[in-house]
Image (cartoon, rainbow, N blue to C red; front, top):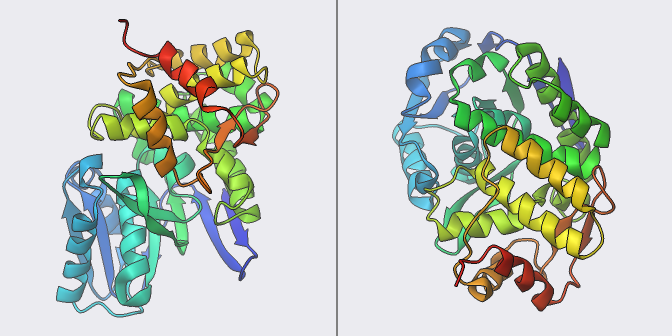
Length: 351
């Protein structure tokens, strides 16, 4: 199955997202596979068997969101210089969203830009992070605040990679699928409610539908100036949670799940989402063991952190919310601070 990406502005860019068994890959240039210490023992040998190139360098990094930093990207770049990579060379990101984001960012920087390919190995990266060209790293100010929009040459989504994925990581990916369904496709949400998402055939359908939704959004809006920002539903709250907990307590999808619940409470207070529909979203997240509660220790400090969100403009905080029930969306930058802080106080530690 192939889902095409075709971005027309400011220049035409085309590549394919291939959802199938990993094909034989033949390159006439130097290739570096960037992976981590968790993924390499599970999948590197199989990828090397499928790959033919004049030189294949393997760059194995530590695993974890805490390593998603400029320091790690500089390590990747140093290895490329040591191996004398040139502007025709290629990077392959073999791993989850952290590896994909850092590899793409390194590719955008090396000699002002070389090619890269995504081989996502987690559900979260297959349905979301690998599609659309967002790359970057975290810093002490927040998540993904340093980066670039830089499109890959191709994305190879092999569902077989998921057979080694821990339950918790699989659930974190489902959070991103739920996000897209709530924002864009009510029927897809109902499919998620009714289906066994661990069934291999159902999982392939879930991945394909998610990728088509994401690809359609990216084709319309590569650089998040409009509809693509809707994909940040749950992220405005979730990114603050990740930052407050040092990127170590929650997986990204887990923080997004909590963020969706927080966003839904705000939407309910504003009359955009019924309590019953908010419960359905919460129930679907809980069905997969995703967290839906978080203790906000200082609601006003939490609120102030929103100003570092990339969607905020001119000191106005933009919130992505269901716009009139499941399958709809709206973006609001006119919500009074006290209205938001009231939601945060609902999650605050009992005094």
